[in-house]
Image (cartoon, rainbow, N blue to C red):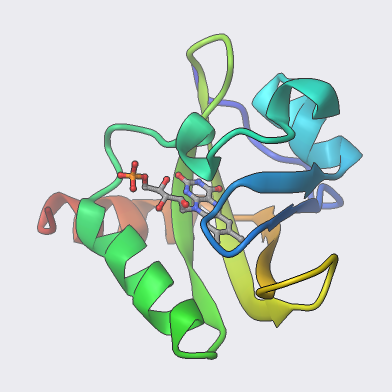
Length: 126
Ligand SMILES: Cc1cc2nc3c(=O)[nH]c(=O)nc-3n(C[C@H](O)[C@H](O)[C@H](O)COP(=O)(O)O)c2cc1C
């Protein structure tokens, strides 16, 4: 079942350099269906939806690893087997904690038109 975000929903998560979740805000936890405790320490693909093409995440990782900001549409899976679409902006080199910098993603609602376009594009990708 699709969960449609509210206009004011804003989902934030932070990871270490490998994509392990260090933090997720209330909206992220609520919509993904997990508590912060369940998410912390998990790889970010815990919310990966099988419909998402691998190439989208390769592009995401190539972009942030080279120090650039990645923007794109993401279909995520909820704990109870549902899904939700977001428009994500992923920032590189967030200096939180010690050692190598991590990453941060901020996500807003994707509109019905945006979702249609992303669905069509992702169907052509692997
Ligand atoms: C800051 C940050 C946020 C991410 N957010 C998501 C996300 O919301 N959903 C998702 O499927 N992958 C997200 N990823 C990408 C995952 O790390 C992973 O590459 C992706 O889920 C594909 O999983 P796989 O490599 O096991 O195929 C994020 C990565 C980073 C660095």
